[in-house]
Image 1: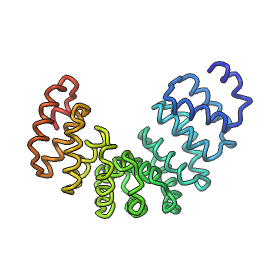
Image 2 (image 1 turned 45 degrees about the vertical axis):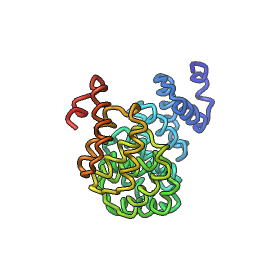
Image 3 (image 1 turned 180 degrees about the vertical axis):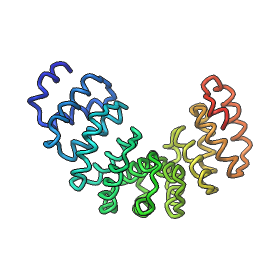
Image 4 (image 1 turned 90 degrees about the horizontal axis):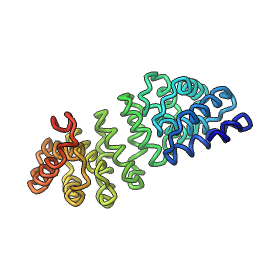
Length: 277
């Protein structure tokens, strides 16, 4: 890292961005090194292209490295060149700033406006990540939500497990009830339920219950998979599942008995929210 820092001035912005992206991709947190990359990019911001802005913001968010001067400069530059961003770059930028709980909604307004135009060309991960960002910011824009939902419906069969989980979590968090998308998510989950990890199972059950949607085949499938993966479920996952089935009035005694037994074993891991339900 020290040798790389010494040669930063010789690098074009894309090289600097690639270094930041690589560190995040490998989950290597070297804070002084990353901050040096950020300072170099800020100093040369007029040269930094949309893709480099998006990738660097993604890298800092992935590493949960909150460099405020860098983020403020990047947000300002992103707003100025938002029309240069491709759809994936818009989605990554929104996700990154939502991850930081960014308070200035002007960035999201500008990015969302740029995203809605070409939304039909967005891929599954772009749609799911943008939906997650909107919900994480608890930002309710009816036109944006409708555009996201309508663009997602015909592509939902191609969503991965995490994309499905992020999408339904977003709908539940912001309480946006879009029946065609919910039905599409449920139908897409069924054949790939084995791909769902503990968190995905808990979030899916919680999300449908939060929206007061009882999709019987889905809930039966989640219950079966949860039974198979019971030892993998953490207290929050167990709490989400128990709460969801109770709210929906779904009486699955073997599931609830297994959840209760597993929860008792894992009480030392619990926080107050888990115990309160």
